[in-house]
Amino acid sequence: MGATRTLKRRRLEGKTDYGARLSLLKSEKTRVVVRKTNKYIIAQIIESDSAQDKVIAGVSSKDLLNNGWPKESAGSLKSLSAAYLTGFLLGVKMKGKVKEAILDMGMHRNVNNSRVYAVLKGLVESGLNIPHGKEALPSDENIRKNEKVGKLVDKLKEKLK
Image 1 (spheres, rainbow, N blue to C red):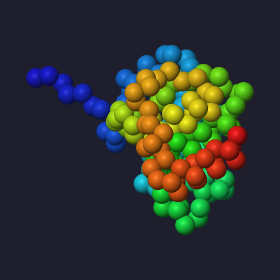
Image 2: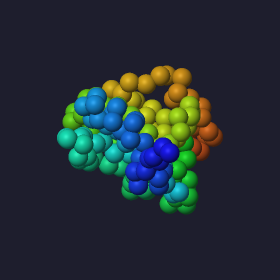
Image 3: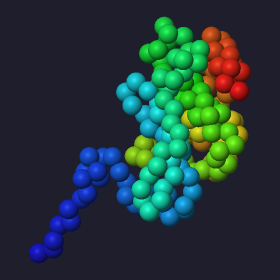
C-alpha cells in the first residue's frame, strides 16, 4: 500500500501555497504582498532573508480614512477604488526606498481587473517597478465608477502625492 502524504498545516488551512512561495523566494526580489479581508485591503512590502520575512512597510485601506476618505463611506473600504488608492498610498510611502518588486497574491485567485490588480495599478502609477501584464489591470473607468467616486479618487491622489 502507498503511503499517504501529510499536508503541511498552513496548506490545509488554505493559507500558503508552498510551491508559489518557493518560486517567489528564489527570485530574491522584494515582494508586494496583497491580502483581502472581509472589510479591508492590506498591502505590504516584504523582504526575505533565508525564508524569514521582514515587513518593510504596510498599508491598509483603513488608512484611507485618515487621508480624506469620507467616514460615511467606511463600508466601501474594500472596493476597487479603495484598493487602487491603498496601492497608491503604499507606493508613495515607499518612494525612493524600493525601486523594484514582484507581486505576491498568496492564495487569491488570479482574476483580471480584480481588487488585487487595482492595488498593483496604484503601486505602478506611484512609480514602483513591478512586472505585470497591462490587460490584467482594471481600467480607469472601473476605478472611477461614478462621478462622486472619480472626484474622491482624484482628490486623494493629489493629497497623497
